[in-house]
Length: 82
Image 1 (cartoon, rainbow, N blue to C red):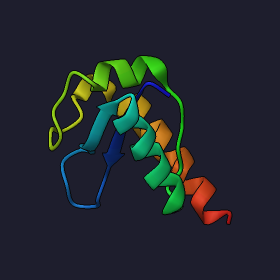
Image 2 (cartoon, rainbow, N blue to C red):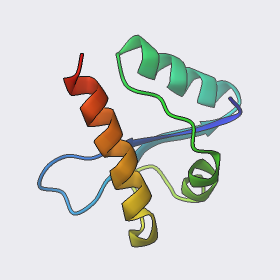
Image 3 (cartoon, helix red, strand yellow):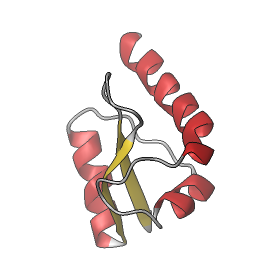
Image 4 (cartoon, one colour):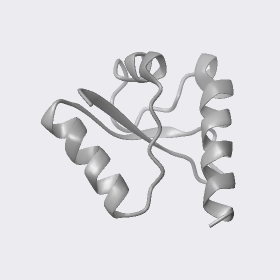
């Protein structure tokens, strides 16, 4: 994995936001930490490319709400089925 973006959403906030991003070794470390802590990892190369243009702390732009919401919904369903 040559790039990774970590996204978080919390109830009450206006949108999901970027909590981490990186390329190469940093991307591998983000994924490794996610797996280590039981955080679901998904590959979405086109979305990752788009989100890599943002900075850590930035809100997800409205044009990506639908796809990010679908991914987060999938992750929450997976988590609740465990």
